[in-house]
Amino acid sequence: MTDPANTEARLANERATDAALATVDEAEAVQPTALLPLPQEPTVLPPSTVNLRSTSLVVLAALASVYVLHWAAAVFVPLLLGLMFSYALTPAVNRMVRWHLPRLAASSLLVLGILAGIGTMAYRLSDDASAMIEAIPEVAQKVRRVMEGHRSDGAAATINKMQQAASELERTAEASATPAARTSRGVTKVQIERPRFDVKDYLWPGALGLAAGVGQATVVVFVTFFLLVSGDTFRRKMVKIAGPTFGQKKITLQALDEIDAQVQRYLGVLVITSAIVGVVTWLVFLWIGVERAAVWGVASFVLNFIPYLGSIAVTGLSALMGFVQFGSVEMGLLVGGASLAVHTVVGYILTPWLTSRASRMNPVAVFVGVLAWGWLWGVWGLFLGVPILMAIKAVCDRVDDLKAVGELLGD
Image (tube, rainbow, N blue to C red; front, side, top):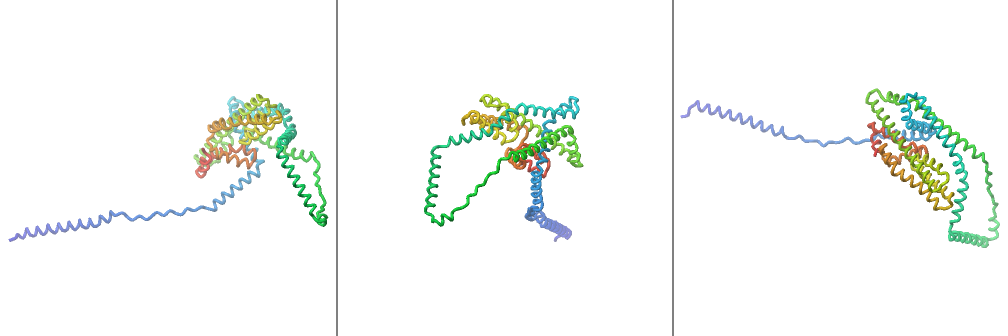
């Protein structure tokens, strides 16, 4: 017989075991479902849109700026030239100020000294320069005679034969024409008489151009003088109006400092290389025996400030004057080749090395920018193009929305 107490205990254990297994089954049924990864929906990026209105406004603003710069060139060019000269002369004025000389006196002495030096050099070289200008008609006549003398006999004979053939064809056509056609072909010959040469027609525009040049030079001198006297007044004003926060003032000050440093280094490099070109050209022309070599040295010094076109102008003019002086094409080519060699060595070896130490600019971007400013302002645009690009790059490197332009201008 089975003990009832044992039977009840066994049944109670079975019921407890069944209840425990049921709990485990429920947990296993829920747990895998909780661990399953949720399905991910594909990420859909919003379509990129271009604000045509903003782009159009930017393009219109750029075109309007170009038009204003071209239209007001008589105002912007003297102002920028005065600004550039003040950058170049500020270190000398600051040094005299450190010598306990008032800034007004230091600026006055420096500007007057430079003007006196330029006037003295122009006075001493005026006779040679006038002689070179008066020789221009003789140069033209000599070049024409040489070109006529070097014309080949075969070409001249061919031209004569063509003229004879044309005359024969014309006579044949007249002989075969009917009398009515001959009479109807008669026309009244009209000869246009050129107006007589009047020197007043040329003196008045020349006088106006000279007066305008003197006026612009005077504006440049006064702008340079006032900027030298003011010192860092405008720098402090620009930092003050840059913005209310300290970060905006700091960025503005850094940009102004970089512009000052780069422009001063660039102008220093330009003055050094131009002086080297002028002195070497003077010595080489003296060795060859070119007349008025000092004038050519000064011209090489001045024209070297104009990128690309200055060296071409000096080379062509020196070759022409060498041909006139020595009377042979070979000597003309020798003089022009000597000038070209000097500009090539300095322009393609010394200048890039010094410029790379002064400013890190992309040569292609600089070339295109100089051409653009030259198209806008002529010769003065070629001179001001590189400093303007340096200032633009210094500003763009510190503005988030314009960093792409700074990267484009950088090396």
